[in-house]
Image (tube, rainbow, N blue to C red; front, side, top):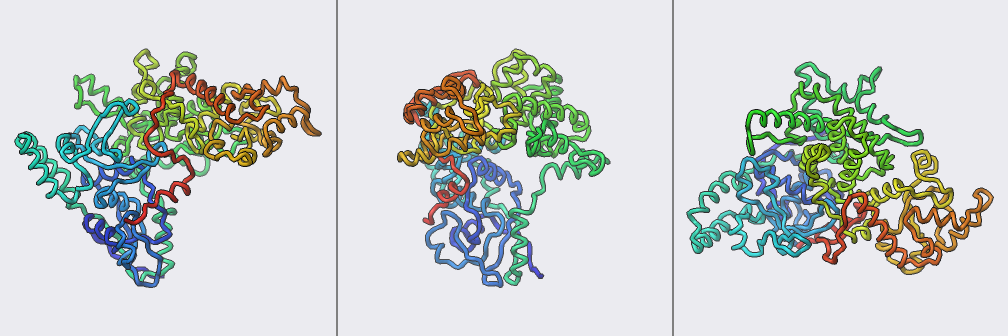
Length: 636
């Protein structure tokens, strides 16, 4: 097997134009572009600072490997008829994101952390980009399709960039013109002269050009180019490694290398020695692992998750030291567990806080079990375990007191139902780590609690088993004492695993379809509840009135259930028995929505929004295949 390749640095602008013209295309088996808004912002921020964003890998066409090509999503129609010079094997999502945002000059279709499809124009906030104390990602702004940002359920206009002059006044630079500086500059000068603001703003604009725009213009991307003589076997192996099999070098690997220079084996701490010690990863995987559970609730806590908690304590200690020295405002170091902080985490800080952090994670497992969250599959947010562990490590044994635990529970469910831990969570994690313990000790409620609003209509759109809020409703029902329709047992961990409990339809899918009901309606969490496998088998696809009669009559393996007892079991799921017994679907949905909403309000400690102003975006809570099918943008 032979392979010939060379590594070159190619101007980003040239690569994007090659995408636009069809000279650089994708092999047809590449997944469609589905990057979310926060990842796009992070990518743009990195390039704006001339930071590396990784190498690309291309394959010269017309060789021994003949993949069917397709243009990058959104490329001009003419690209469809072009025979490409190269195919992009690795870097598709990065290049498509950059092409869509900077060169296509059309609104970008993307996805929010709440799985909402939205249209966005992207801007750089010039003032923030020039402020060294502002995280560059915070300077990258996504605006709706009409370029007007609204708040207070659409009543208040926060930012209006609906015309070029308004962009100039707000000093917001459109990323769609990042490679067309001269045109923008001429327009800006004309506007500033007309308004008499040129002398005040031009120094800012000049500095922005030098410090930010020039980074885009001069940006060079490393490209590993496989030539046409590369064999098919070699190409397939390379593609597999860079897309699925290969693991990128992460912060843990880099920190491990740094600590090794000081004689400390970080990898052994985490993975054990393979003989006597199982390592921290093994201890987490075994923590509160119930007999019938495949994995413990902490089994997927990663090594960088653990280092993040250590970093939060270390950076908070540095901040407190700076405060003691009289420093204020921007002089104070940031409390954070982001990648940069992990790479700067001293060995002595790791050794100081590692036991503290481990205790926090183990306590988090107990806390989650108390919320009736027993399996990783039912965990609303894996990422929320990080601040939970850090907070529990910080408050120590105080979490065992009812008043303290009540605040922790309220914070946790606000994070879940506010859907705050979906992506780009570093800032949220650090904020909660600082604010929640202070709240527990008598301070103000954290922003996760005070600023979160749950919308009543969200219940109707919770359909995906992987949705955090969907999982949250299921856990709350079990926590509040839901009892199985057949056995009447509550769902403690013994029943949960022994009876194979999961979420099932109340009005069965088959019955709903027979009545012409839409799946968008009957698949929502309003029509679902935790039930045992055997109970769901009895329910089958029959009308509720029929399967309830079966449950009451019993059979050779299940004793009869009195109507009164069965009504009690149904009520424990917030179901009105009279509506279920009469198969009144619409009335049942309205009644149970109101009851589930009250349950969520109780957990969050606040009322929900019941108004009629819709949330921005089109509901897109489906599986990844469904999203990808509609996210492929037609060539224009």
